[in-house]
Image (tube, rainbow, N blue to C red):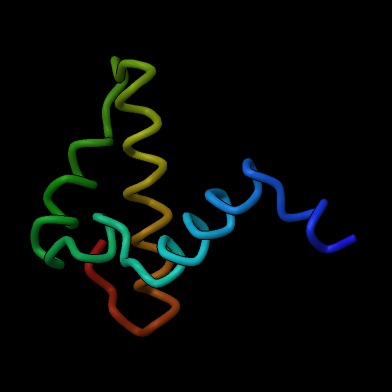
Length: 73
């Protein structure tokens, strides 16, 4: 039963998930001052769709840092 569950497709996905779970995202590695500067660029009326997604990532990282007591943005 277990052998059928761990097919050729599942094993690479499992390995990828394990490897990625231990890595910091590029947002987490970004210095505080850089994150603050880049997140301040998100206040505007004419943001592209791609920039809106980037800004959501900045905001998510800002919220994560605030939850850890780091108020940079």
